[in-house]
Length: 83
Figure 1: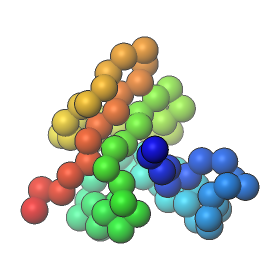
Figure 2: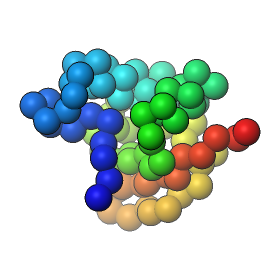
Figure 3: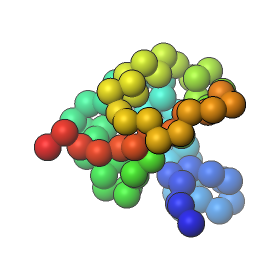
Figure 4: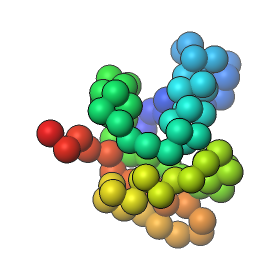
């Protein structure tokens, strides 16, 4: 019952833009205020970090978020703002 920001290109509205957003998110390696606002606007509550996401960049910036799942090479973080 969860939506994704970017999934299958033919089933994602504005697929090219959303794919680029996701790539930039994982490649930039930071959780800035602007990024937090963008994630909130997209309705993000969980961040999935698996093998493909780890290949995109250093994901240590996600360690500040609470982990809700961690097994089999996949970590899911709960996204919440610090405000």
